[in-house]
Image (cartoon, rainbow, N blue to C red; front, side, top):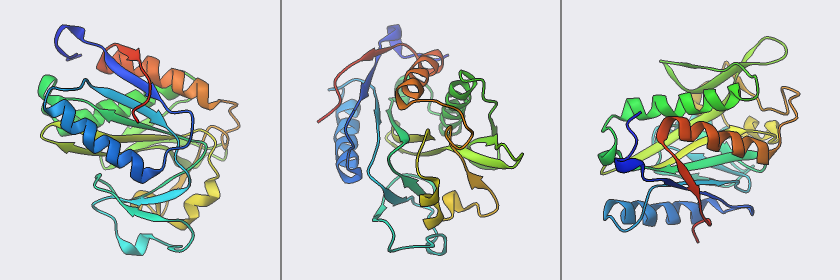
Length: 224
């Protein structure tokens, strides 16, 4: 599994109040610097954001359908336009690939497998594709939709940004964009699939499945 040396535990933090996106980016930048310098350990930070649209480095302005509806933040992560908001769990993953594998594609695949395992913990079959990043499921009407998105950045082989999992967000908010540039497929959530999964239960399953793939974790206070 390529765990870190001596199975040193990865810190796992959960913010229970909404975190402004700009604040999260500032905190991640500082943590990545500390990890790179050997002054801090690896961290997974779980949170929810107030409603916002973020634009990745590949964002196409034509995919922003309702530019006045939400604030738009131009992020340094990879990917295109993404919505974040209440009812969606975001996990920012700050790992040192110098101590693991310097393999960007392999890291993304592990993130996808982490999400697939999490959904499987709720008996929800999910899948990934080679030609589109993210995790996909079938809705009740049989159509395919994305339930989790991935957007990462790597600086000197330290990762940040991460994944988002739709538990019970307002799915109409996604109408403001073409999510991840894919116009012919929609988005879904546990709530949309009529699965009564709480934010707490989803976070707990994320933690269990993460440890299976990336190594053991220890709970810690959220970064300030």
